[in-house]
Image 1: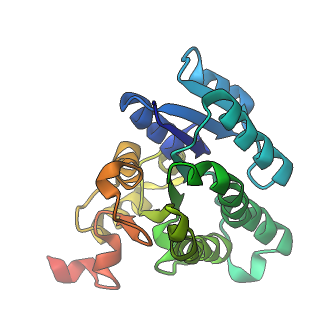
Image 2: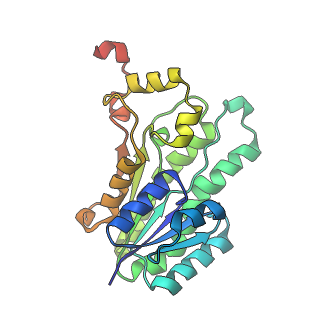
Length: 249
């Protein structure tokens, strides 16, 4: 029987690239996003893709999207928790409303969606892949809410792996480094781009498709004995640590 994956934040960027990768592999794909117009444009007119407009921070929306997945395809083999928001600012200027907006989607959404999907994933043993960030592994300025939320996602992934492994569900995380998305290229100045290139051993940004490849691997049968891992798909950014680029020349 054809396998099914549910991907949140699927209307654009990494989520859309991941959806296309799974469709290419012949899976049914449930694409979830709160931007209904963008989602409709991304999924039409495919029959193997189900578009669901939903907010992962809303428990009722989450229950509905799991029910719709079961009703349409009758199974769920993988869940990709990709939906996220990025709001940056200094600690002193981060008000609680901003903190909550980031946590609502980036952390609460992962918890709610994973919990709701457990019964469906457990039917045949499935995989959860949570999209964290290199900002959850190493601190950076202006990311008090975002970085903390992604660090929490990493710990949540480990908790899921330990507990859900008992019922055949694997859980892993992908931590992207700098990725050449439309949004990043719109807000990163030439100076920021040059600085990232210097800090990355591969001397370039990653692509959305490269992140999708890591996600695909962790959901596939090739990763059947991989659980509780964080794959930093980051061009060596984490490995380079605090080393100064000038010292590598």
